[in-house]
Length: 265
Image (cartoon, rainbow, N blue to C red; front, side, top):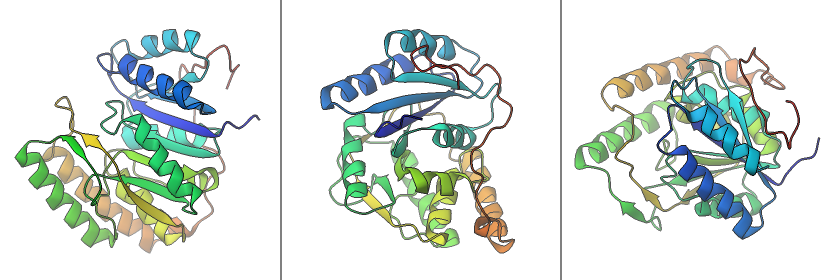
């Protein structure tokens, strides 16, 4: 298999309003910077035109391909599905709203170039720049949840939830081959796994802007994430994260698509 230098994974669920703008920004950045890169959009059972828009985009942009989960499984599942299918030497994921501009990926790539196995974007380190702040209640809930997560999971990072993370290919297969959380709480789990398996993780300040269309509910989803943190600790006690990771996730997929430029998956 031909391995591009970078793989960029974008999980998407009902993203008709944003996905073409995201692909335009990502493809434009790839060309402007001369990256050898592929873009994997993982459609999580969208009931709008997200998949059709990505397929049409892929016909004109050979770096883009579509993977479909078939039905809604959650962001964690979608990220894992894309990360384990990616071919790049460095594999990253970013949210469809591009709250951190894709150009900021160069900061993550630089950290990996300096020796990190994993580089995670942070909205709360000195050196980051917030271009559009969240409402106060979201900042308060976010800080409280992050503090609780760090305490329960014993994670030393200022920001565990930023959806902007990059991995060496081998580190990605190790971490996502052991991941079990399929919804919002997967971010602390993959960092927990990385630490348990001795990976070098660098936290990097990034530019970030809040998107008012964010779907996460700090009350409903926050409670679910707290339960998932307990599940992670239980998995750790059972030795789940000490096992051999899966080589490649190949669960039955419905409607997987790939650009004609790439051939069949």
